[in-house]
Image 1 (spheres, one colour):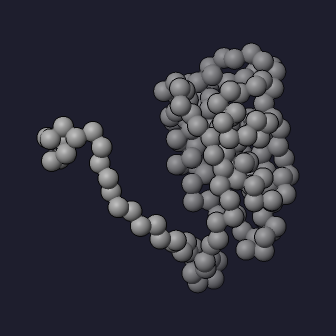
Image 2 (cartoon, rainbow, N blue to C red; image 1 turned 90 degrees about the vertical axis):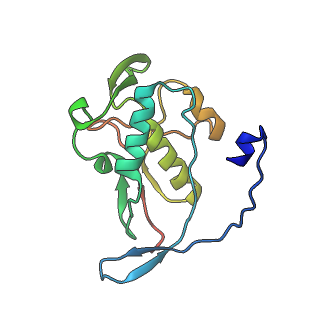
Length: 167
């Protein structure tokens, strides 16, 4: 507050980074330590409000905190759950149809969530069970990996990987 009142344009904050231990309660009720294998990145800067809303919904309500047990196959469409529709809170945003036609549909943009998960699984070296790239070049995927995208469409196209880590 004092900096704003004095018209300062730069602030400095000392930060200390501490590695965290992530724990989950397993099937036995015992806490188990989790290990971060990799991360996936993408950006939705410049996207419309509907698309941004769908990306946030996909991440926050469907993908975030999903635990894939040892030996299990993660299916993106299974994680999405019920139909992707406006009734279920998905916004209208541009979606690719018929190999190259862009038109609004509920959930437009959720492929960015599957793409971000795909990049993390790929970088972790996990076996990719199902994956298909988009039929059009998607410019906002370029920053973190050209050709590293995973299009999904519930009931037709899924992204899936196997957790073969034993943990």
